[in-house]
Length: 109
Length: 114
Image 1: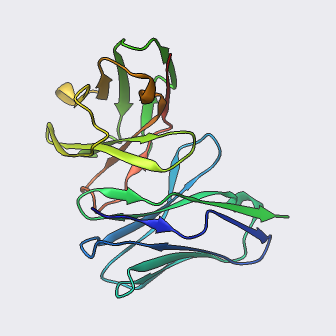
Image 2: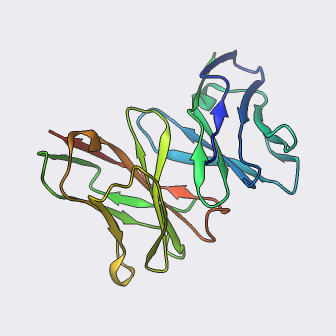
Image 3: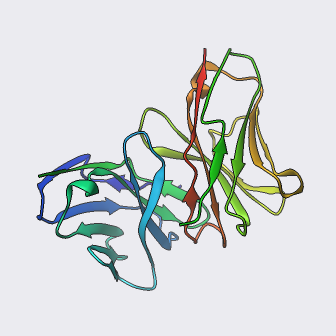
């Protein structure tokens, strides 16, 4: 089955800097790649997604890049703010969602 | 945004007992999911459900697990009997158009099996 790996288990940046979280997947059948954010003790909150028919999608400070050849996708957050601090999960989906292990993003004031 | 509700928020039960976790999905959604998360670790897929049937389930969805949504009411996950390793946070999610669509997650039910 699909295996999604998140390369950074933790990421610490200063407020205002950019943050990049990288993920890889294994199954070429995956065609939908959502990102979720989870704050401590809370549920998953949908952040942004990308489908395999495009290689880039931007929403305000968030950009997702998809490289289907390398089976790699990434989340870029610009102008980070302390409230961006959370665990970010990448995921890949064809008939079901497979989540990565999560990246703890810490934005220091 | 769309809201998924889960009842109860916490449940403590003795091993071997039955537990039912309830999910109130987004009103016009047709696809429903259960996930299991242990101690803030990876979110693991259990099952998805559409049109009254289980569409896909993982190895974690043991024989002791069952799901149903009788007459459009709550989407439920029943565990009978419970085991110690069932202790986790269970998240329900729903989507409008299947697994290639955005899933909206509920707040979770924290289950502790003693």
